[in-house]
Length: 274
Image 1 (cartoon, rainbow, N blue to C red):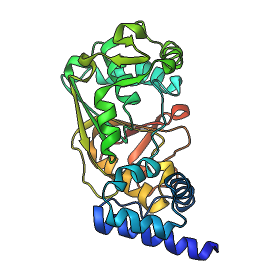
Image 2 (cartoon, rainbow, N blue to C red):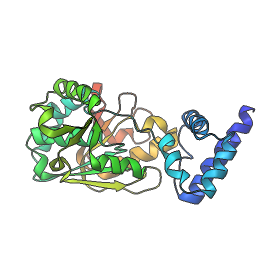
Image 3 (tube, rainbow, N blue to C red):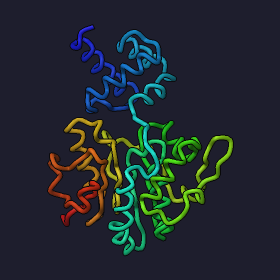
Image 4 (cartoon, rainbow, N blue to C red):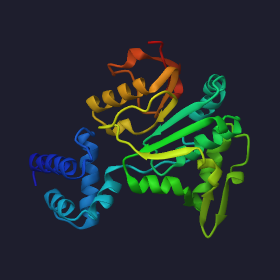
């Protein structure tokens, strides 16, 4: 099959997902989407992307399976420890001056970053005055995040990252391990609101003091990246903080002038005064 025909198939499938289910992947980076659809086609046993479109249009039970391919759910707790160390040492001292706080984890995946931030804020004495908003477009990922259950063989890496981030407690204090699973303590999500939210189509979360959206925008095309950054700008309080992934940047955004570098090496920015 020619690349031109496959491009048409991809475009039609993405339009079908939007029209039928209101999931909008039309402005995700096309090369990445094509790779994921190729994987989906192979694993779901369909010969073409057009056949995949036919199945998902006529069988709604196919949608969650396809979403798992289209939304990347790969993370780990305290991923990029220097980011969390910078939050601990440079951002949280500023946030500690507020009587109450709001934190938005956009594209929270299976919840690893949610629990990382909850533990960090607990260690720094800020958890009880903070509301965390954990959002994603994948309902199965949100359910996994809310459950807080991870394979126990991942805990070693989580623990190493936590220590490197300057952790002040033992990670083992925050979970119970049994039957090959680690279940994180319910107290870590007592102040977390899990919610469906799309950076493509939905509106702002108002008055956030910190937004952490890491390794999400690398899958967007430039106009969609710009929309997301504008959404973050409008969601932040004056002098609020935005954390991005190691491969992401505000450099080419039309909204870049609204932000100042705060910890440049860890992609943490601060909203300028309006």
